[in-house]
Each structure stands twice: as C-alpha cells, then as structure tokens.
Image (cartoon, rainbow, N blue to C red; front, side, top):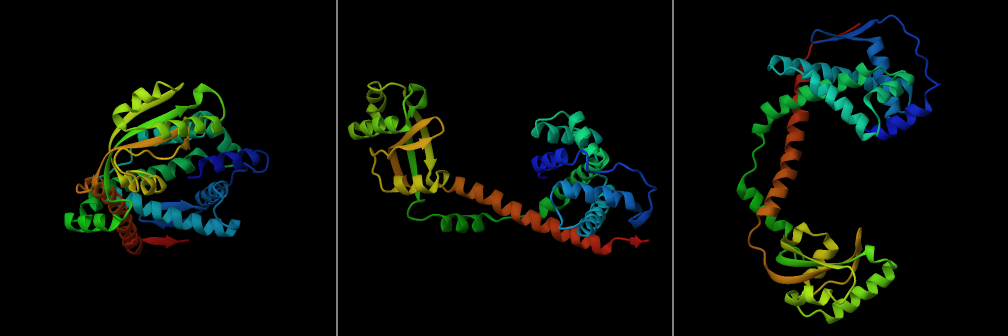
Length: 300
C-alpha cells in the first residue's frame, strides 16, 4: 500500500487540500451497491497519496475501476456467506498505523488533513478481507501441483553449485571486540590459515577475542546465498570459506560434511509456495474478471 510514501505525502499536503463537503451524487450502481461521485473523489485523493495515476482525471478512472472491482468482490463474498469482519478491518487499520510508527488516531488525523476520510481506507481493507475469504475457500482447492511436476522442477533448480547437502559450522569474529572490519578480517584470515577441521573449531577460536563458533546443522545449497553456495561447492570436507562481512561481524563457514543432495524436500516446498502463489493469483484474476463481466453495472 506504499504506506510510508502515503504518510510523507500526506504530511506535505496538510494545508493544500480543501475539506469542503458536497452533496453526494450517485454515479454507478454495481450489483445493487451505489458508488457516488464523493466515493470516487475520495478514492482518487487516496490514490494521489499513493502516487498512483498521472493526473486527477487518470486517478478518477482508476478509482472507478477499483470501486467496481471492490463492489463485485463484496457481492460475491456475500453470496458465498463470507461477511467482512469489522474487528479485523479495524485491526488492519491499526497495523498500518503501527507500521508507519503512528497511532491509529494520528493516522486518521493525517488522512483527514489530506482530505481523505478513514472510511476510504477501511472500505478498501474490507473488500480485501472479503476477497481473501473467497480465494481461500473457493479457489485454493483448484490450485493443485503434482509431486511429479515438483520433482522435475526441483531437479531443474539444481546445478553445479546447488546440488549439495552440507553440515556447516559458522565462525564469526564479532564487532563487539572493537577495531575495524579490516582488522577483524585479518584475524579471521589468520584463523582460516590455522583451521584444521570442524572438531577443533572451538579450541582454535579460544585464541581470539570474541570469536563465536556455532553449529548450523544441515543446510541445502539452495538455502544459501548464491555466492556462498558457489564457494562452498568448491570446498572439500574440512574446508572453510573466505571471511565475509555480515551484520554482526566477519563470518566464515566450515564444511563439516558434504554430500550430493538426494532429499529435495526443501527445494520442493519452496517451489510449492512459489508456484502455488502464482497459480492462485492467476486463478483469482480470472475469477474476478469473470465476475466483473457478469456484474450488473448501471452508470448514471
């Protein structure tokens, strides 16, 4: 929702938007739900805060389309017996405020000062919740991914650097010891030069200040950043990677065990989520397009 951008622009717009009220004129009736000129203006103002649309006219067209879609979503949700949970809508509104490091009241004040009523944002949230219920209960069952397809896709993901299982030990030269990254890297390189296998990793670390050793356990190469996976693929058991800077210091990874990956469960689960999400999004768009074409839309 680009909420941070929304808040910043709203703050800049505190004195630039008129709050003048006007009589609401019905512009459309979508499946029995009225959409007024005021609704369209409000949504267009909100889109301006989101930096959507190139002009006011463009934003009004986008607003009309979005409001039609939301009316269709709500209509289908009601037909299937899914009512929008107002408590959930209020909680979502509060979460948006918290994510922007604001209270819900402060978010309301900022939106109102920019000419946008809270109802505009809550209407969108209400439609999103209703549609999520439709997708979860109607469309998700249509998204079926066979294990055979996943097996084939998982094998295609594997390459020269991503076809290994490792047992890894992490060695980190922590920033808490003071000194520059350069000096800590020099110490890490000295450690690496004297490294003689995972069994002696802890004992060797005792010669250095604030050098932490932690067993990471089993890792598939696809769970690692590509550059790390490429480096580890070239190492034998007992090898250790070059120092690399991380958030808390300088890190190295020691290869305690290494074998060809036979269990592709992790890769398959990751693919299942990725492919499932793509298929579900495609099904959702197709379903909404069908409902939109079948909807009763009266323009006035």
